[in-house]
Image 1: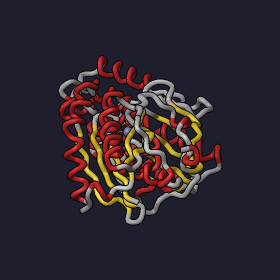
Image 2: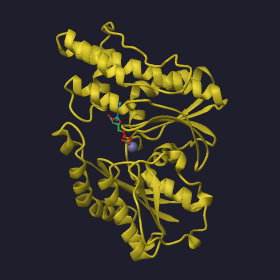
Image 3: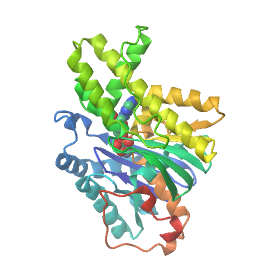
Image 4: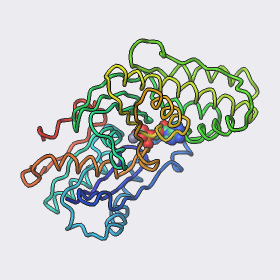
Length: 348
Ligand code: KG4
Ligand code: ZN
């Protein structure tokens, strides 16, 4: 089965073709970060307009990359939510129109399901059940994943998401948008320089006894530091390092606590912050110490992409009788949508 995946939930237009027999055939991505960078954050209206400009050329490019034509497709999967409503509507309407014209199913996919299944695109892929640490710009959650569509929320952030905290802190340090990768680079450079650490930031909710997170206080603590000290490149590096260490400590300790609590020994890390090198190496080390295995998506599939949507769509469509899948004449998007509310494949 050949599935075209379309992702347009935020500021990346991602398209991919997944073949249930051969795996990922091709994928293409256009990132709008440069355009939004001028404004210091994502401007929803501009995001929607840019998806409109990019999506058809990317679909053409992806089909050519897979050496197939539109008529070869068996189904289309698109991100139905959560995300920016206008941006989601671009992908949803293109997917629904193509499905209508080609008389094939167009299936709405939960963006976070795409993220948490993305490590299954790699080899070796984790078996179910596993714990997923979802760390993106909009979400920070620990999930128990027992199978496709079977997700139990174990804990989540009570305020800012981890990626959001990276972005806001980076802004305070004058690192531009999106700040996560820039802040992480600065922090890694500081650590490698061998200079002694100058600052320690709080580890919010580390001992809260549950699996929830809080990151908004960290940003405030950084703000205080930026007011107290002259912002030389070295000081910025020291603050970036303190911030990255604090976030990593909390994320890794809670992820380990989730493994302990459930008795599971496989951890999947997904979402944009999963690209963070310090977090990756810390989790590998700490999980190794308790005999657990950590699975990551390839770096290019940590942040938003079409491959994870095509893959999630293919998995869902494989577990139903595609010939009997109703062809929808209408479509909706869900700007807010809890992952546990996602239907199991048998309910499709
Ligand atoms: O999953 P994603 O691409 O989009 C959402 O669904 O939100 O995640 C984007 C987030 C941004 O906040 C970005 O700053 C953060 O992931 N991010 C990172 C790194 N790369 C991306 N944060 C820390 N270190 C990184 N290397
Ligand atoms: Zn995402």
